[in-house]
Image (cartoon, rainbow, N blue to C red; front, side):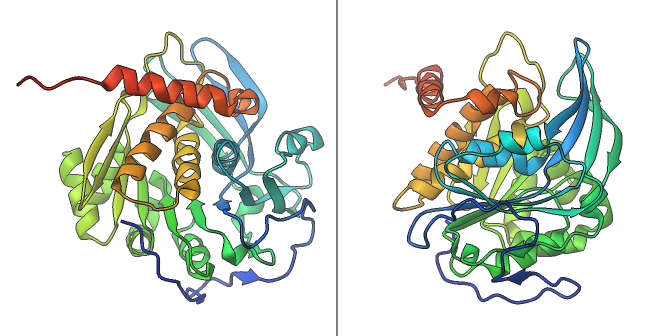
Length: 339
């Protein structure tokens, strides 16, 4: 399914992705060696305000790259590419320090960290965005530290499609790449987004985003339309109902894990992506069977993420817990066909 041929680094018009130098303000953990597997995660590290019908948190660590990186680190080495402001609390940065998360790409790029506020309803699949403050991400240009062009897989969390494409093209020979997006870019940069999707192996969307991009109410048809448009595999996130994988080779649906209580679903989609790509980064051959397993691993990690606010549950999650829940998914979905 994914392409294995190398890609040349080329600039996308209007983008100037630099590589080779360690960015000013970067943390200086040792980078994984070039001969080791590594997942590049690019996106936002932010501070969130989240309100549900049952509780509220403010100044909480958040951001798409945060949850994806923590989830991916349960499987493989992770390289985090993101920007924060001078106001980013040292205690929150410390939460990201892990033996296998390289923070060389986490830079301080301006005074203000990005912030987001959201309010959930009793139906936790729906929420209202209260505010989005771009902060440093308003004009941040990513810079790949030396050697990061050899990352073996990459997840480009929701962001400017031109920057996502530039990062993909800067990678030497990734085994698999995935891009995510949000309604903001679907409404404001759809043509650029569709072109970026053509350069990725996988595209991740929630069901409303998939319908909007493909201009159809049918999830199955939306997936096929995106495949026809150039995407190689489409992962449609269905919230508490699970996730669907659509490709030329396969149609696969993983259910949501039955939880008695959901605390906060904000980071679930990015945790899913981190688990999915983290698994793919570790397997010798990326084929349809491993992609299916990746969907279940991603769903397992996401089901833990919603057990706490923001990334809090991911901070304590272990691989043994993930593997146990993976086996639970297998038990829940197993059946024997009648003769």
